[in-house]
Amino acid sequence: MGVYSLYLILMCTWMVFGKPTVKKDRVHHEPELGKREDNQSFQYDHEAFLGKEEATTFDQLTPEESKERLGKIVDRIDADHDGHITTAELKAWIKRVQKRYVYENVAKVWSDYDLNKDNQISWDEYKKATYGYYLANPAEFEEATDQFSFKKMLPRDERRFKTADLNGDLVANREEFTAFLHPEEFEHMKDIVVLETLEDIDKNGDGYVDEDEYIADMFAHEEGGPEPDWVGTERDQFSDFRDLNKDGKMDKEEIRRWILPEDYDHAQAEARHLVYESDVDKDQMLTKDEILDNWNMFVGSQATNYGEDLTRNHDEL
Image 1 (tube, rainbow, N blue to C red):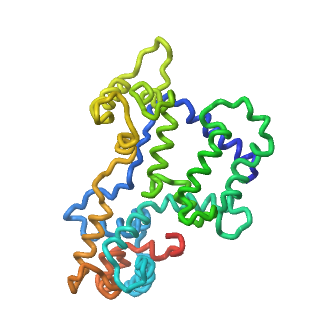
Image 2 (cartoon, rainbow, N blue to C red):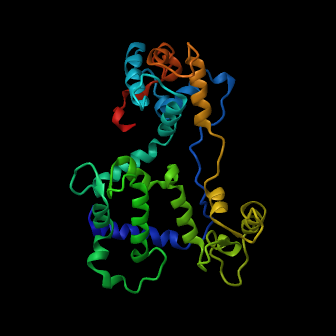
Image 3 (cartoon, helix red, strand yellow):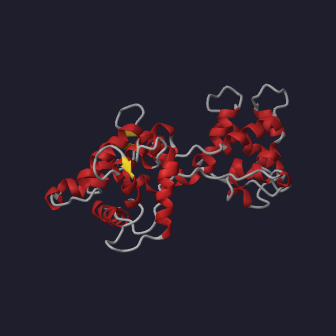
């Protein structure tokens, strides 16, 4: 993708989202596994462990093939390579599977930024790919005052990149670049998500979001025109549920609770369930043998009609 083409895409995107005319949802929602039903048998487990789309392909593998390929997945789940799968490791895998779309999105754009093809993306590479035209022609942007202008977005992106770059070398591997592009999915990036939201909405620069700023982010009010009913509902939401300390404005912690709600952890519950059902020696961990002995709960095969994830390139997961 050419730098100028990327510039046009970015400018169009910022113009579209710069002044919303319909209700905007800033809340980041966790992928929903839903509720377990008693009559679901292993279907829920397959969808949690493999992903819903992958768990719908029928008659892909024989039981022998399923167990063989499941063993390879188990090796990937065992992050510390100690031969045991903990609830935490299983939870991390389930969360990763449920967020596969995030990693697939990064894979699609990776080559646009990895300019020297070394399987890493440096800050300089990202800056050149995204802001090259601006940096080469700064005079064309001198009059820009929009909050999403290149002049403002460049330092903001640099701050986010440095936060995602855990080892501080200004070079992002795939996990770090994923955190940069999708910060809402990573715990260590959530302060940045909150800060960027505050900067977007806080028009008077006082470090808080008041009710009018909260509404203006969702609704472009025409002078003298009526407000839709939902705007009144949002005003009630602000006073009743957003402004927790009732001081008429939201601080960073209140913004965090609004946009990053701490919902029920379905991945944790499913990980505990899988461990409980497969942990023969009751040491609260699973060995590869314990998982393979109960393989049809995790993946299935021709016998239970599930198993597509085992046919995928495991590097995709």
